Image 1 (cartoon, chains in turn red, orange):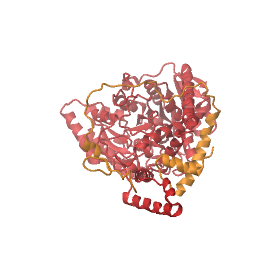
Image 2 (tube, rainbow over the protein chains, first blue to last red):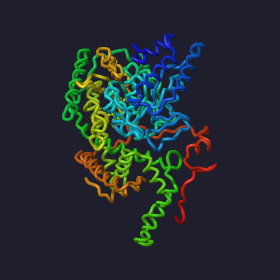
Image 3 (cartoon, each protein chain N blue to C red):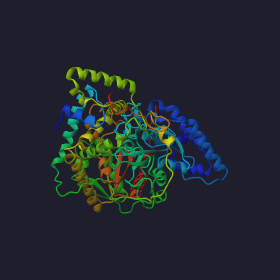
Image 4 (cartoon, rainbow over the protein chains, first blue to last red):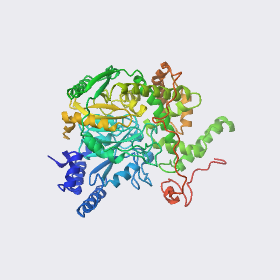
Length: 513
Length: 97
């Protein structure tokens, strides 16, 4: 068995027992990247020398008997939406291609303090907007199980690098399913913690009331390693919650006694692929065999979740992305060309309509903003800025934004009622296994509908995770979605672990040709 | 719900984007589709429902009003695409083009 076939939990035990060094482990993953990332393209940037230097430093400190952090020597990959001090942080966008933040995100600072080895920054949909990774401004990531297919998104690189054994653990972000969907499509485990559980300081904002950082790995046990380091209050993020962080790594092995598992009738209707449905129903039977009681529920407002999401998320995005102005950081258009363009427009307007026609002409500052943003943002980001700007504009605010916020509350109330009867809600993560690259690029609405089962978790502010529960006849991974009430990450992880004790889907790995 | 090309142009200005003719055409169709889809929210009775702007019911969070270190000028300016020793530089806003 190759070193990179082990789980993060096994790696840590081996590191602590001296059976492997961090340098050996890091080298093994860097070799794997060297060998396979030419096809998968999960990483935007890897600095092998820096990673090796860090690994060797940790090995030296271990040999010297120094006190080490909880992840000491373990390689971890980082989604390129998280600020790393002095290192490029691009959000897979041209507008931030050369941006080097002057500070670390809180989660990065915590990982460094835990002595993890940051192995590289992973590819994603630009600014986390998308579900296929095709919206990266640089290149699409491919699914390690079938390189003609998408890995899911937006944390596509984060999921693909774990599936392809190029990192044992990685950090993603989830605004509407961006950890859970790629985890499902790449056959690994991934968690979106409750909003407020993990500090968002230094996470480049997409939709601030929905964004949350979370872990991806092979097993629920592996997720606990990262979550325990990432979770907790941070004075730098006023929305991070001041609650004690449980010892997830210890509680995860305790199965849930008398588990009441909810299934939502509306999740098993039209649009759900037959093989995905069969795998999810089989997973539910596994839970029943472990003593769980199954209860069918109705969530009448769930069908509005995608509509609510695609108002609220673009509204928040259009405000957040206003900061890309070509002044403080990031890309700025060529000013000489811009002035020549304005001069030509001015001359044409003067000729056709005289002085009066000049009223509509942008001043140079406005034109600089517009050209910088037009050249720096990709098509999906522009689309969402447009939707958000429209929905927030005078005359439409009540009809769209406020209306969506009201239906958001109804969606949350559906969950509150459901969790009076059940402990966890189980269902599909995605309606189908991974689709082909290019299949949905011209149809944004059908891409949005792919988030059908995951967006309501973010709208309601719950925690949820995806774990592998099957393979399609074509050999593509299928994920099981578990959702829990707010701040019940322990319940999610224990529920996932008990499933993984009874099944072996989480041990399947793609062949990588 | 459909949206006119003129409206799309206006929104592009408000959103500080500059769209090509081709993008304007495509955006008009795609925004129309998306707005048509989200229009289904009209059928939900929300008369008595309070808007939910946030996942957590948190009120304002305050910290001690103490002096703490922050980015110095050079660090803040280091990321700017166009600057001098002390300031961000932008195209002229006032006066003739």
